[in-house]
Image (cartoon, rainbow, N blue to C red; front, top):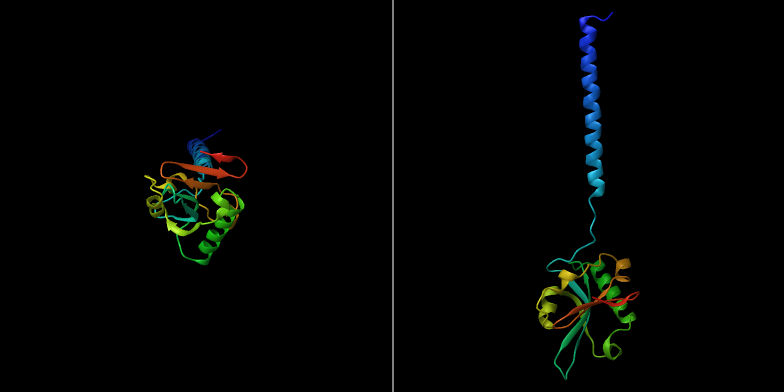
Length: 160
């Protein structure tokens, strides 16, 4: 036989079990939400720096650029990344005239480059930043003219 005390403790026990199960479900859902949130790659930002090369065509007066976006900063790491991106651009063998008469672009702000090539928008808004030396060898190269921006990927060729 159960007395009043044991009945009350069973009700409390059932409530604790129900509460524990509910908290477990909530904790599971919250942990799944944390896992499901996508991690995006480094995105372009205003004031980022560009490394690569510019060319000025004397006949047409047009200036074009072959560049890759790198993070802000003046540390040795950023200098090494810039050097690696310039080597990646030279190795792609897409520079006009075999790369002769090129103007080196080292850590130039996106907005400044846009003015030099008369591109009306921030070119970095369509680029993915290179954050380390491994990415510097694999990132698509942006080709920027006064009216267009295209990307060169060694595996796929020219892409939009």
